[in-house]
Image 1 (cartoon, helix red, strand yellow):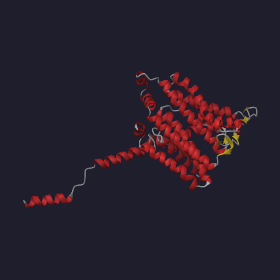
Image 2 (image 1 turned 180 degrees about the vertical axis):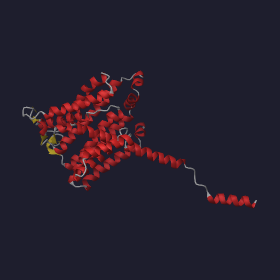
Image 3 (image 1 turned 60 degrees about the vertical axis):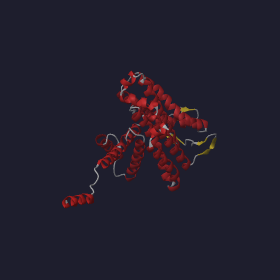
Image 4 (image 1 turned 45 degrees about the vertical axis):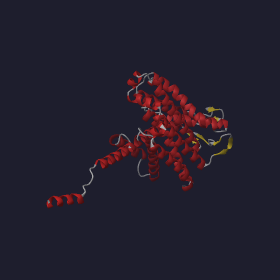
Length: 353
């Protein structure tokens, strides 16, 4: 019951809304819109992974796209060789998590500052982008899976029912899987934030020296949340590769990392629902701008980023939430309106006496 109390009513309302979307969307929208909402949800999982590292752990990772891409490629290569998607899905989580474990071990135990952590993760993402782009030669393959360089891997086998390689998921079933995964990841993030480990992470983020004086090893604590975040990002990469049966080195690009950070800033990194709404809202805006071709999408995103950094640095969700709380507080503290009838009767009584 204590966990339920700490999660708060908002968590259960959000989960209920997610379940409602899961049930309603395939019955209301056509196939094209179901596919669009599916990719929005995939990117929302990616945004949650960065929110876990940055918002909860205070680790600004400029290379979240590296883990996203590694998860996608791990799934694509493994499913090409195995046929069944069960183990490849697990690998899409394990490979980025192990990579983050090795990378984070040197960064956090080496006591690198936040600036160097951001630079190193960004460089790793760009290195992976250049490496996978240079694998055009057919000799670059893992088993039966040919990496195909900047042209990307196409015709990636779809996710299937475990143990039945021929029973692949149709678009509606894929949407249900992605939406259920988004709800599950959101709940995991909330549970982590209210757990003892989450409170220790928060303590390390707020004052690392004081946390260490209390006996906590901040390096291992940050390493733990960094690894979990990378695993979730890798799983999002797996879902992305399954969504369009294609993956290319573009998943490691600077644009992918930049837009993920924009989603977090717009939604609010101190919350978990904020990055979800930020990812969905900004993707919808990007899609609409892409169809009109009247404005440059990158220019608009840059203006939005600068506007939020300057005017609403805490993000939209905390801004709206705090504004509503302040309004409610003012309404509660406002003195009650005077009873005109009672005052008039009292004055009449005074005059008669």
